[in-house]
Length: 224
View 1 (spheres, rainbow, N blue to C red):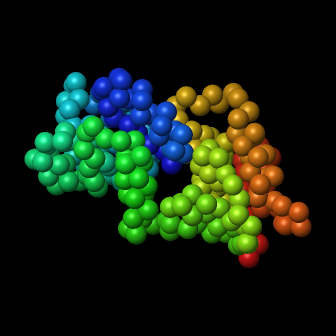
View 2 (view 1 turned 180 degrees about the vertical axis):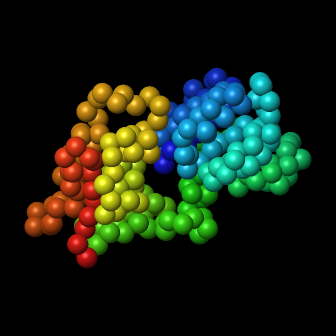
């Protein structure tokens, strides 16, 4: 899942961003309205954590602008403990939920996961392809009766592939959805994770499910 964390407090951003990545999110950070506007204009985020007070404007104005431009990402407003009016204003402006500052990272992660699995999403909580299933709520994967243990990044890559099952997913699309702006396009990290997933998904006697389309990308396809 690709996430934009909009927060001008450098200490908070330094503490929270790595924790969100550890939880399996690909995270970009913006410290200003200008940076957030630029990033949201070129990246299709799954969720945005948006601070209310920013040095070059306020989160409400940015929220209204994003919604006005058709941004469909789940938006979680970060408000002060006594900012009841802020919470109401944010929800009325199009926010999906809010978290009170100072917040614990586990609470933030839980709220984000709850937002991303709401029934109104077009994609089900459990992604399936043949005998392969990935539960995005519990973050567990199974093939038939066999449980598959995945790292956070393996989970992110598999989720991208399962959401596009049967289609070729390019390296650029994988990088865009499962990594953040720190991704090095010249590295072989995608090949490494694809190889790891193959070993985990394709056990003895099981059909191949993860296919490389030379010069195009990767395709996940599982016979029913």
